[in-house]
Image 1 (cartoon, rainbow, N blue to C red):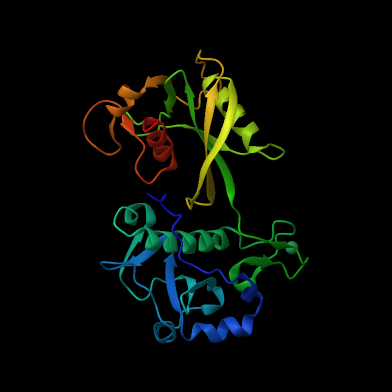
Image 2: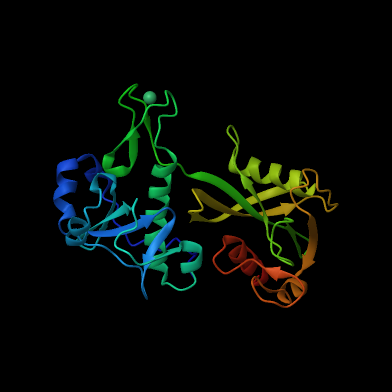
Length: 288
Ligand SMILES: [Zn+2]
C-alpha cells in the first residue's frame, strides 16, 4: 500500500511557473483548492472552486499558487483570508482517513505551499514585505532582492533492530500506550546516516552500525519530509540521554503483533497509525 501523501497526481509543469501571463490565462479553466489557515473546504468531498466562483466572491488571485496539471486541467492552491464561500472547513489530519490517496496528496501539496507563504511574508534578510514569484513557488524581497523558496525540513525516522527485536519509544505527550520509532530533524552539516546515529544515541543510548534507506514521505505538518530507515544496533543497553522519550524498550515480533491500534480505547501498547511511515517500517519488519 502506498504511503499517505505520496500519491500525487500532478504534472508540476515547473517551467511554466515563471510565466505570469500564461498562468493568468490558465486560471480561467482551472480548479482552485481553497485553504483557510490550515483548513480545507469540504462537503462529502473536498470542495474545489472554479474561475466563476473566484470572480463572484472577489477572492485575491494574486496569492494563488500554481500546483500543476492533472490531465489537461491546471490546478492552483488558493489561500482564503476571509472564509468565503461559507462552508465547513476541516484540517487534513481529520480528513486524511476519509479520502482517497490522490485527494489527500492534492490537499497536502496545497496545504504545504500555502502554509509556507503564510509563515514567510517577510524577508529573512532585511525584514521587508515580500511578494510571491514563480507562480507562488518563491518569494522575492523588493527592497534587497533576496529570494526565498518553500521549505522542506528533512526528518530521519528509523526502525532500530537487533537480534530479532526492535526498539520503540514514546514521548510523554503522546496518547497512552503509543510507541513509535526513533526520529528527529536532520541538522546542518550532517548526513542522513549521521542523523540516524545521533538521534539513536541521544534518545536511547543505542549505538548503530548499518543504516539502510527504505522510503520517504512528505508530511505537511507543517513542512517535513520523513526519511525512513532501518538501522542495526551494535549495542543494547538503553539510556535516555536527552530525555526526549519517557520510555524506550526492545520488543520481539510476537509482542509487537499483540499491540493495539493508535486511537483504540483498550489498555496496553499501541502501534503508530496507518498514515505514518513508522507503521510501514514496523509492518515491513514484522513481515520478514
Ligand atoms: Zn529583503
